[in-house]
Length: 214
Length: 246
Image (cartoon, chains in turn yellow, cyan):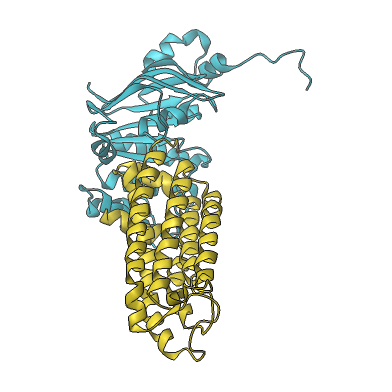
């Protein structure tokens, strides 16, 4: 698996995927729909999958002494690394954003707090669950897979950002220590959902890809 | 002579094409020319052997082992060149090698350096900066560096100039000279076969038409022509429909 991950980063990864990982810095913008920062990581993954297809990575990998499902596992692990790295970059930016925001808080949607990261886990979970099986159904229709994944992900982005404007849900916008503590169960639920759906996406993708004629 | 590869009853159905009960052997130390016209089923057969497509039936054994049950060992022991497919064209040769060598337990770096020098391959070039012949040679260098005992080559000489083709067929002869390695290569260029093949497997409309040594093949179809090309053209040629609008 180490060799496959190495291949993924050296031969398949699009440079913009790594740049988009840094877009967690967008949380420093005083007012902005912060969940969009995580959309860029998904866009980066789309670029890498497209790059893999254009460079005939599937054919090359099929000739290596590995099982077909190992190739899927490496691609899913690659997604997980990119997604978690984007969150890791966003965490210090969120802490800083909560302290230095001149407006006192995000005027658009979710503030930079634990609830935002719960939303990020939810978005990545939805994206992985739709994008990966859709792509591995054919092994090459990366544009269709991204489009299909973006529909529920965009709906989730809108719902997450709008939620803080719903009366009674203002606590989702709290950036105080107590507020973050109250949001922790949401964060844990998001992480569990992310792990569960990504694992399911891997198994489903591996089964579908096994049937594909290259 | 034991067989490096045994293919038995390979079948694959597509809406517009069927691979029918394909069976043949690649004896150890042999260069087997897999010949047939465009669309005869050469690539589908090779892809079925490699597991790139799922055959509907049949069995493939490599050095006595079922390739589906021993997929990893099978792929460790083979080298593959798919003509006309360029992997990672914008990546440097050095980068691709650095990745590839990590997958093979028996990678021999010294051998790799030797083949790079022998084939005059510049590691710092990108794949798309190599000529077509050089790309085939690079893939052969990768295969030989992990001590592949069977080379499966899909139209490796197609699209190459006569000099490059001649160099490659000479290389094929040298590769099998020690009797330890075997080559199965598909082509529709009969002159390449005449120069290096010891055996011929001729596929026609998705079914094996004939499979034997070159000498037996020539003897069996002596009435059809004096050269491989004459025989194959004679077998394959279809009469033009006189009523057709041209």
